[in-house]
Amino acid sequence: VFVLSPGADPMEHVVEFAAEMQMSKKFTSISLGQGQGPIAERMMVASMERGAWVMLQNCHLAISWMPRLEAIVEQYDEDLIHKDYRLWLTSMPSKHFPVSILQNSAKMTNEPPAGVKMNLVGSYMAMADDYLNKSSKPVEFRKLLFGLCFFHALVQDRRKFGPIGFNIRYEFTTSDLKVSMLQLENFLEKYEHVPYKVLEHLTGHINYGGRITDDWDRRLVMTMLARFMTPDILDNEYELAPGDLYKSPAPGVKSEYLQVIQSMPHNPHPSMFGLHENADIACAQNETNEMCETLLSLQAKVSGGAGKSRDDILAETAKGILDQSFKPFELDEVMKKYPLVYSESMNTVLTQECKRFNGLIVLLNRSLQDLMKALKGLVVMSEELDTMATALFNNQVPAMWAKKAYPNLKPLAAWVVDLQARISFLKDWIANGTPPAFWISGFFFPQAFLTGTMQNYARKHVISIDTISWDYEVQETDPLSITEKPEDGCYIHGLFLEGARWNYDTHTLDESKPKTLFESFPVIWLKPAPDRPKPTAGIYICPVYKTLTRAGVLSTTGHSTNFVLYVELPSSEPCSGIYSQYVETFSAHWIKRSVALFCALNY
Image (tube, rainbow, N blue to C red; front, side):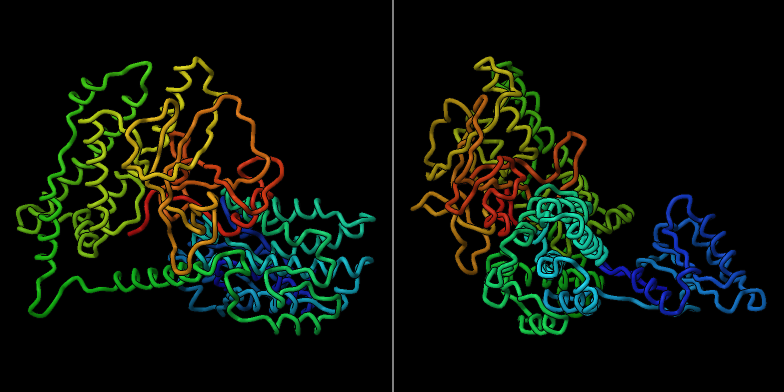
C-alpha cells in the first residue's frame, strides 16, 4: 500500500520496478473512481490466475467499493493464487480505507523533496548520462532540461509561502515534470530550431496549467516560466534566479550538474522565487499559526486550579458582545429616506447592505442569548451551541456567524470591533447622506457598490454600461479631508498593500520596507470611462481581495467570494505587451512579488 502525499506519485517507480523484475508485460493498472470497481475486480481475478501484478490507484476516490475490496482480499486462498501475483494499492490517508488491508500489507510513503536544492537533486538522480546524450541538439536540450527542472523546483517550493506563494496550493507532481521533459525531447527532434513558444505554452498552460484554477496563479506561473523558455538560457552567464549561484550551468554530464546543485544553499533567499525578503516572515507566521491551531484543538475543555472556569469565561465573553448593543437597522425608515430612484443606484446598495447586516445581527444576538441560557442550564447545550462555545473560548469567530457574515480572518475580539465599525459606517451614511469617500472595506458585498457606481454613470450620460470600464487615479490625500464626492465615479479608501509600498515621491509602486508586511494604501479615484484605450506600459495590474487568503470560489451571483476587482497602479518596473490583467509581460517584477491589495487584514 502506497500512502500518497501531496506532490508524490509512486506510479513511475512501480513501473520501473516491474521492468526490473521482468514483469512489464504482466503489469496492469487502473485509476479507481465512479464505475471502475467491477473492472478492477475482473483485473484482480485475472491477475491471480496468471501471476500478474495489478495496481489500483487512488483508492480514496472509490469509498463505496472499499468494502468489496476488503472482502476479496480476506478471501485470498494461497493454494488458488499464483505465487507471482502482487496487488499494489495507492491511497491518500482516508478513514474509509479498510483497516484489515492496512494491517496485512507492506506500507510505503514517498514524501516529495523539500527545498529547491533537494528537488533538483531528486530530478537529476533519476537521470542517466545516456539520457542527457540522446538529443541531436545536446546543448539546447541540456540547457532547457536544467531550466525545466529548476522551474519545477521553484513552483514546488514556492507553496511554502502560503497565499503570497500561490492563491491556491496546487499539488504539482513529478509527472508534470516528466511529461514536460518528454515534450522537450520530442519537439527538439521535430523542429530545426528550438520552439520556445510551443514549449512555453505546453509546459505552462497545459502540463502545469492544467492543475491551475485561478487566473492570477496562471499569470504567475507563466511569468516564472518565461525566464526559462528563452534563447538567453543558452548563455552560461544567464541567471535563472538572482545571484551568481544560479547561473545557467555549462552543458555537462550528470555528475557535473549534481556538483553545481550541491553548491546551492539549502535555505535560499526569497528573491530566488522573485519574492521580497519579508516573505520569509509570512512563511514563519503561517507555520506558527498552524502549530497554534493544532495546540488549541488539543486543549482540554475542563480547567483546573483557582482561576476562572471555562463557563465563567464564556459567560463573560458572551455578555461583553451583547453589551455592544448590536441592533438591526430599521429597513422601512431607510427605504423611506433613500427610496428606489433611477438616477441613484447607491440607495439600493445601502438598503441591500442593511438587509445583509440585519441577518447577521439577529443571528448573533439570538445565539449569544441561547448560549447564556445553556450555561445557566435553562436550555439544552446543543452540538451547534457547544461548537460556538469552543470558538468563543478560543477567541475565534463561531462557524455559524462566519457562514452568515462577510469573509473575514480576524480573531473574535478584532472581529467584533470591525463589525461595530462597519455598522457605524452605514449609520453615518443613513444619518448624513452619501459619503464623499467610501470605506470599501466596510461593505458586505463591495461588488454591488462598484456596479452601482458604474450604473449611475451610465444612466447619467445615457451610455451602454457594457462600453464602460474603470480608469484609476491614486489620490494622495487623507480620506477625512475629502468633503465633496467627484462629479463621476467614486473615491475609495481602507485598502492595504502587500508585497510592495506606495512611494509618495515618485507616485509609483516601490519595494516594501524590511519587516513591514502591509502598508495602508492611499485613496483611489475610480473613474468610469467609455471606450477607454488600454494602457501599453507603465502599470501593474493589481488584484484587490477581501481577505489575505486570496483564494475564493464562484458564488451564485457570478462573483468570486474573495476577489473584488483589479486596479492599475503606476509602476517604474518594465511593463509592456498585449494588454490583459492576466498577461505576464505587464510588470513581471511585481507579479513575482505577488503584490495585491486587501480590504481587511487578519488582526
